[in-house]
Image (cartoon, rainbow, N blue to C red; front, side):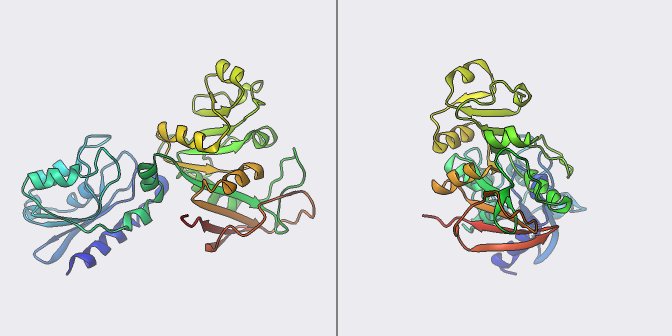
Length: 341
């Protein structure tokens, strides 16, 4: 059994993880081999719970079997104590003989330190320098490599291309089954964003409701350049950020953040706040602004069966090839990834 084959088993283990459950932690898988046989596999199940390496080791009935064994893990073991202990310390304590790592961790608290700690303890380390973890955890890697959140745009529209019947009128397009899929996507996010028009028209809660979550609710982010929300205190709660160019509003309301009106600046600020992933849910003008500035990584379109005939047009034009499309409820869910420029 060669390293690449065994690492593929580790990636398969990582794929079992629910990205909504791991949330801001990466999905990671681990496989332990002793005397040419797989003796354990594991993966990170839930944000704040044991990591993949420890999960795999806990599957081994006799801990003495770990001595001299080889572990294949998709991402560099952490070397710092966060919500759980450092995985590198656990591997050292178990006296593993070798650790094969699929990809280095971009988190500066980990990057290179996990490898160094293992090597200092006399454990042989092989780093494959693959990109499998990036494919599994695009938001995690994007955030630590750019210091900005991974931006996913989301738009629901009628089959004839409208996102609302008319300006200022809330229009329900997706059915209950499609809404569950949307909330599953929300559950994976650090923050959910809308513009002030959508906030005032739809009064969205911007929370995860139709699926269970084990982590805190995402941040609510509202772009309100003119300060239209300053007389709407229902939007002022602890996990809300309202970006505005209205300096009076920003000075008077703790949740209001003064910025220069540029999305670049806004994303920089979100990154400094540790927000890894951002779901932009509309309205159409805000989504188009992200498209126009190429400040997005993924675009999810829910093309519903609803027919409006007239109304506010959605996004016009080809944003790139459709990577996947899945039928969910009354909508065809299409996913487009922005090509790197």
